[in-house]
Length: 301
Image (cartoon, rainbow, N blue to C red; front, top):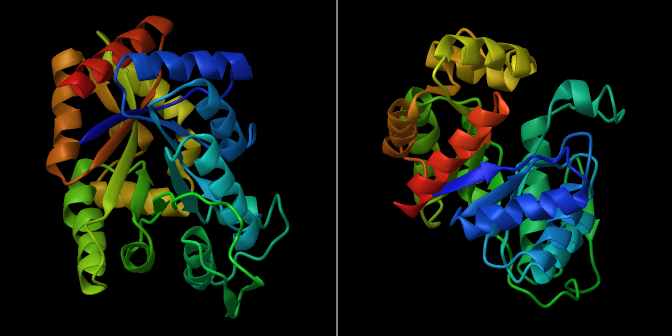
């Protein structure tokens, strides 16, 4: 299992570059960048990738609705070229409250939207022209995009059965958040693996993101997780995964404890079938430092 870190994108760009540079020096496999309400993730990773060699750079995740697939393909290929083919393109639907409430787009038929989006995006990334007309979008190019670089792997934020089937059939894997090891083992991994096998595709990547805190005070850390990550317990897609796990809220799937306990819990994610793990360090500055040190040690084996 590859060990990665979800980077802190609240820093100035020079600070983000320095952060990723240190992760690369320490042997972390992947630096994952969220796309929320700050930096544009792909632009940021293009900048970082020009400054920092070797480490894989992933988006977790870029929402599809605000970007036409032709535009996202061009941006992703540009970032792939800028980073020396180190991009992992994580994409997702986002959430109804964001797509309708902020962008003013319809969130109707999200699974149909994603199937059609991938039907246009994947050929473009693989150097093909596209002529596609669906029920939720259309895309037509006169020729392939003129960016001569290999396609990045595409991971779809997929949690429900329909989305996992799409990710296995049409993409290279999935990226999850707020999904515990029992749900990974019983639902996520077997569902996407079967879909990939049925479609004749390679075994999918399953990139799992969870909050992590190495701490001497687990109760206090879980209280902090409950406050920090409260919104995720209210979003329907994550709520469904928490319910599957039997978790009251995000604090119950956060990985918290001393070094050995945290290492064991991350090991349980690997045993559940994850190919990638991305830690989202939280807590005090000392706890974050200890968490990064442990993830670095695990990455080195």
